[in-house]
Image 1 (cartoon, one colour):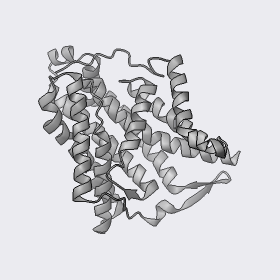
Image 2 (cartoon, one colour):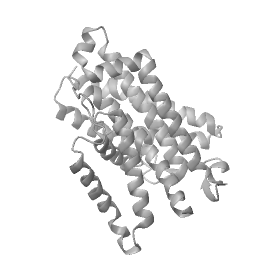
Image 3 (cartoon, one colour):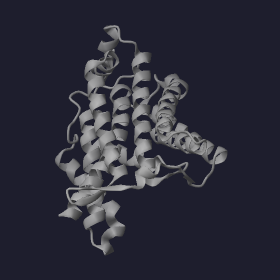
Length: 297
C-alpha cells in the first residue's frame, strides 16, 4: 500500500507538469488552430536562465521569477517575430514555422551554450524528503504538486474573472464574432502566447528541480508528451488538457512501477497502446471542446 501511494504521488507530480504544458499548447490552439512545437524551447530557455542565475549566485526564488519571466517574454517575441507574419497563411505553413523556430533555437543553444547537459544549482531543500502518513515523499514532489494546484487555480480565475482571459475564451469560441464585438486580435493572440510561456516557464522549473540539469533538447520530450496529453484530453479543450496530462502521468508512472522487469523496455509502446484504446472509446478526447472553431485572423 505504501508503494502504491508513493507511486501515486509521483504520478500526480509528473501529470501536473504534463498538464501545465498541455494547457500551454491548448490555449494557443484554441485561438489560432496552431500546435506550437517550439513550446518546448520555452522550457529550455527557462532552464538555462535557472542555470545562469545559479552560477551568478542569485537566490533561487529570484531565479524562478526570472526564468518564468524569460519564458513569457520569449513566447511573446516568438509570436511577434515568427508567427504574426504568417498568421493568414495555411495551417501547414504555421506548423512548419513552429518546427523551424524550434530547430533554430536548438541550434543556437547547442552553438552558443553547449551540446552537453549542464548542471543546475538547486537549494539543498529540494533534495530532502519528509514522512507523511507513514511513507516518504520528496520535497520537490510536494512542491511540484503544490505549484501545479496553484497554477490551475490561477488559470481558472484568470480565464473566468479577468478581461483578457474572458476575451481569450470568446476568441476560442468564435474569433470572427469576438472581433466584431471589439476584441483586438493582436492583443488576444499575444496574451495567449504570454500565458503559454508562463505555463512553460513554471513547467520548466518543476522539470529542472527534479533533474538538476538542462540541455538543448530538454523541452522536446515533455512537449511531445504534452501534445499526446492534449489530444487525449480533447484538442482545444483546457479542462481536457488537464485531464489528459494527469492521465498520461498516471499511465507512465504505474507502468514503470508495476510492469515486470523484462517488459520495462516496452513501457512506452504499451503506454501509447493504452492511449489509443482510450481514444478509440473517446475519439474526441476525454473532455472535448464544446465548439472548436479556429479561424485565421
